[in-house]
Length: 450
Image (cartoon, rainbow, N blue to C red; front, side):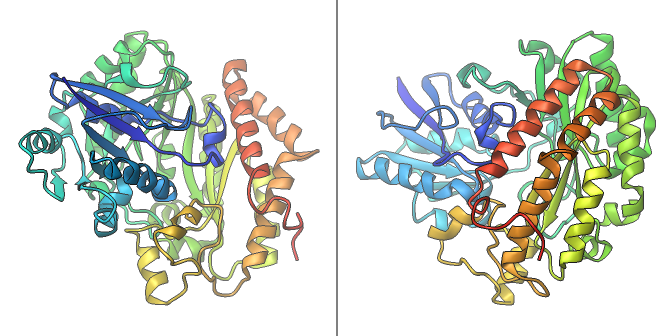
């Protein structure tokens, strides 16, 4: 029996990878395993838990994000030196496959499920092609169950994906190029069957937007939530969604009744000009002045809010950072992802930065290690790089020290109306605080605005 080794590289742990409360299983590899012929032995090696060490295999497949692709290249090199064929895929490989082809025998571009049996068949016939392009999967007739039995049992959250694609084209995001601009979703009945089969009570819906963007997708979400309630699945879960989900209070109410603990929402910035530059149209339409209304609607039903914000945009002043810190401290948002603007491959932002010759780190692939949302990798206009690092320290000090931190937690306890939900929010806050304290700039820059 031939052996397929699937590898999830990490390299060095930072950010979300430092806590099991913010670490998620490599679901894509579990899908690859599911569409591998049954006469193959399959193993998933996951560096989220322990560093990878060489083991023999007939074929190796590696996924990678931009920030860990160099670790993927190192592992691939080790196997290729020994004569083992290596296939690479994932979002980085899909965005700049020419680079990846220099480090692997074959590259899978796009969605893997529809093309992987062909890859395996070609390998078995010793005619592995250098490049494969996976077709967009018809999710309404998607009956593939990921091989969760191969995933490490140490994950708190069991990842579930119910949709792909995004009609928006935010300048800093490559999802629409990777998965398409059409929002495709699985049938509620199929998702419910999968949820029922999962033993864990804790679910992370890893869709870029579980509720979706159209009346049809919202109705699908309602049907899913009603099914979770009617079947008494007893799951506790979280989801990503856009800011306009709060426009339909009924879908929020149903989500809460179905076990939603918190939602991840990209607020991004409190600057209208920056929102427009980001092409974040849905937030522009809602309006920064209505952010608090969105938070209040989710809190009305006891759902926590995990707000994502980006700093490092052009023309951000010391006064803006002061205003942002004041706002976040009193916004009612329960958890914060504050990241530094990063132009990733395949994004409009990257194309703009390259066109304007504004990249500071462009020795690729070596410099990809810095593209992890905690480095200023480009020269901003109208502000200074050191100011961004100081601002990040300043804002997070405001959020994670006395008196703001305990006060925020107390408000969350009152808003969530549940000790179990509050405990999840507390643990995630602790994970985010630890991530900040481990940042490369934490000790190097003062925690004040200048």
